[in-house]
Amino acid sequence: MGLAVLMLASCDASMPRARVLPGPDEDPGNNPVDPLDTLCRFESRDPGRVTLHRLNRAEYDNTVRDLLGDTRAPARDFPPDDHGFGFDNNADVLSMSPLLMEKYSHAAEKLVETAWAKGTLSTCVLDPAAPEPCARDILRTFARRAWRRPVSEQEVERLVGFVAVARQQGDAPEVGVKLALRSVLVSPHFLFRVELEPTRASPEAHPISDVELASRLSYFLWSSMPDEALLTVAEGGRLRDPAVLEAQVRRMLADPKARALVDNFAGQWLYTRALDFSQPEARYGFDEPLREAMREETKLLFQEFITGDHRLKDLLDAPFTYVNDRLARHYGLPPPGTDAMTRVGLEGHPERSGLFGKGALLTVTANADRTSPVKRGVWVLEQLLCKGPPPPPPNAGGLAPAVDPTLNIKERMRQHRVDPTCSGCHTLMDPLGFGLENFDPVGRWRVKEEGGATVDPSGELPGGKVFNGVVEMRAVVKQDPALSACMTRHLLSYALGRGAEASDRCNVRDISQQAESQGGRLTDYILAIVRSDAFQKRGGDTEGPTP
Image 1 (tube, rainbow, N blue to C red):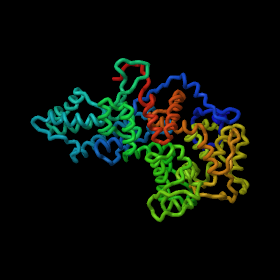
Image 2 (cartoon, rainbow, N blue to C red; image 1 turned 90 degrees about the horizontal axis):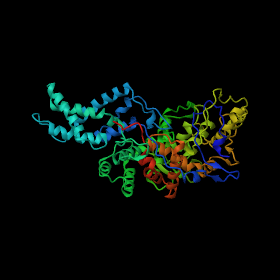
Image 3 (cartoon, rainbow, N blue to C red; image 1 turned 180 degrees about the vertical axis):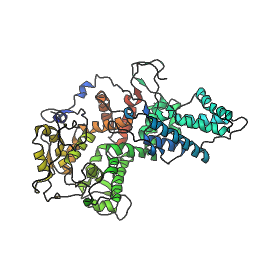
């Protein structure tokens, strides 16, 4: 029986709400059996359909940075973005409100005024007697870049019309041009990633245009607009050429702007962003320098998986990390002798290898006053195996206080699981969390809990798999046949800006298998995604053409 089938209920109120996703089944001999092997031979690949995609705050800031050279991050003043399927670039939850539109208008005014004062928008000199030719040149160039596609002459002339409006009001031509520039920045063509339907609506899936593909690619890898090189290739109709597409992906991943994958994809998938909100109790000695070092450690680790030659699965047990003196002492490692984050090997410290030894993850999956095997176990299930449990029942209760101080948390939770409504999910979640119990709520190594009880980091999973401690536990997780598909599912959800649904199961399987066959590096997963129909096509629409 598969692990996902055993997730029947849960009763720990501290557990984050989760969704149930399908996982591979197992036969009675514990040999993986993937029923998709047969199903996907005959099932068509539906690329799905993405809702009109508003730029989220990170994408807005990165886009105005690359469009105007403005690094003030104006979107910090915008309302927070909602999240769907674990990411804040999910188009289905990126709504538009009157308040947000007001913020866009105000930001556009400031952005244009600042850029105009710096001269970054002037490609020619406006002639007061005949400003239209220069205005036309400025606005055509700007709108093409801002809207991330070629602009028609009719669109350009509508923008140039602002110059005549300014003249009628007795204002200088530059006033009209700046009004037109502001209108470009509050247009749906800038604020949304627009993908037009064919002239005649069809229920059949169809390829998106090359310039639309360029935007999908740039917002996937950079959380920003296409640069001139990418847009030029797309306008020339060459982006779908396999060699050209691969060359563009590799070029973009080598660009510093690919740091967006660290901040926005890994920051949400690995919960690094959540570290900003963690407040462990004062007795653990957690402070801002430690928080910053933990955050940078995880970012630098993931960055190396973008640029290095590591298999993506090796995130679980990479034998190196990045520390400064503060974090090294916290971990019990030899200090590198600097406050700067430094790459160090982990020989002799296998407990620190990979994700499970990282203070950022261990802190955000703990409570303020104690560890949480449930939170840590759920993180492993959801983020690495896509076997998250259902939400807890309404009458779920928390872990009772320790009556006997000699009981460790594992023994206390054994009592908690006596309730049959709790035992199903906890049988799956808790063992994985117990494997991390040698780490305290801020990721320090320990062999005894605060009350003096000896830590028991052993666990047994459904099906009889046993382990003792983090090293053996991560080996079990790394060998799980669901790991590759789950990593693909999260990366695909982020790449498309929509949740990977059950109908994507064959797409996920194809991408995962292709990536692993090419070496299993993060680059291989990214290339497999951008080559897929799910990324290059969209589902049909029978409601008529988009205006």
